[in-house]
Length: 188
Image (cartoon, rainbow, N blue to C red; front, side, top):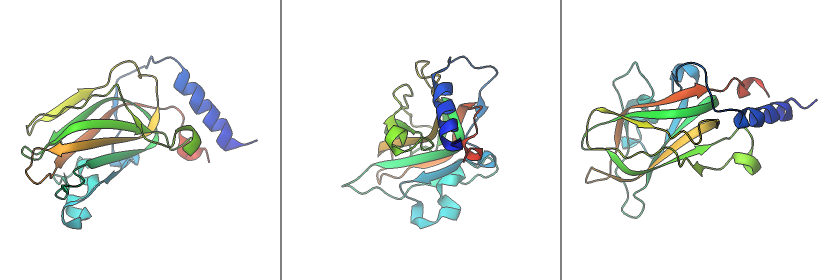
């Protein structure tokens, strides 16, 4: 009996089942639920004060602050890794005005299945993120087409920033949706 293959097979089957969900969406990007974050850069390399986890921490008023972008490579990114497969229904992002990431592309990844089957980033075509210059929380809903798909990580790439130096500041990055009934952490 190969426990890993058994859970992978059930995970794939669950992914193909109906997109109907019971109940309301829940906050998926909680540090208390084991979500982690990674980013392209951190202001002054100070992850305690400006690291990517700050945007997930509801108890803190700290933020993720990127370092200034390089003219040769202006791309910045922010990634969230979940402890179990999730079905994302919307993002709620609060930028600092004047430091808003723009020209965004969202990607998804399933690192539980393996490189050959889903370990690479794929564009999340049904989640369009187009932030505006504001301090208010902005909500970006996902289209219904991929509503039955579960994955384990989310990445947003910012081609530009409203800041002259290319810095991005995110006070809150919330991912809302559904958790998979299959917990991949207990399956290996």
